[in-house]
Amino acid sequence: MSLLTLRPLVAKQPNYLINLLRSRLSPKTLSTSQVLLRYYADKSHTQQSLSKSEERTDISTDVRPLGERVKENTKTASYMGVIVLGIGVTGIMFYAIFRELFSSNSPQNIYSEALDRCANDPRVQDSLGAPIKGFGEETRRRRRTHVAHSTYEKNGILYLRMQFYIQGIRNKGTVHLEMKQNNSGKFEYRYLFVQLDYYPHTTIILEDNRLQQDSHLSSQPSSLSSDLSSYGSLLK
Image 1 (cartoon, rainbow, N blue to C red):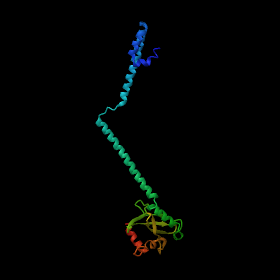
Image 2 (image 1 turned 45 degrees about the vertical axis):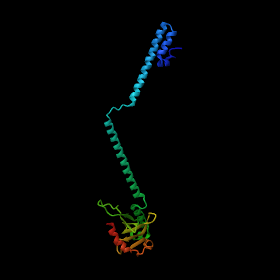
Image 3 (image 1 turned 90 degrees about the vertical axis):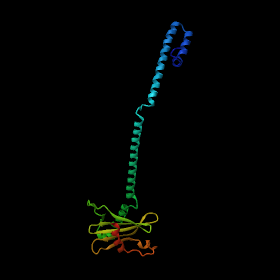
Image 4 (image 1 turned 30 degrees about the horizontal axis):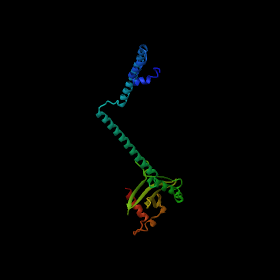
């Protein structure tokens, strides 16, 4: 058996092997063998010491005081809280924008649908002249994108009133509409009409469902003129 073969055993039991070699080898050979055995034993011991030292350094290299580490962790947690809060606020904003733009009950969608109906009505086209465009109230920046609307509740039912303007190549008109929320939560027209701005201020009625919707009420349905008179006060 060679010394290289005994090398793994040297690392574990060097003294035992030295005693074994003394009993079987000559003094000269024994001296050489002892030197080699001691060399391998010392080398193995050095490697084991380095390995243990590396394990100890891997355990923890943070020598900062406990208070400083707690402060750092608290700061990190506060930053994470701000980030989470920002994500939440952004999500709410996107949800509100999505609901405003794409919900069938949103004022913007109601305006777009009513404008489309008015612009494609043959009577309106004949009175104003096609093509017809729509716009809202004029803002301080002289932009006419704001569409005046208001909501109110009566007998536990939600109503929406809206007013905007349309213009053709010849004349202008004002659109009035009112919608009522049904049992399924969707709005349906009570009335939709266009009042021409030039004399004799003819009214073109596109839809009027007040008589059918109010038939179950004991009171008489309101007239078109009374709805016009009360509309201005609701928008204020």
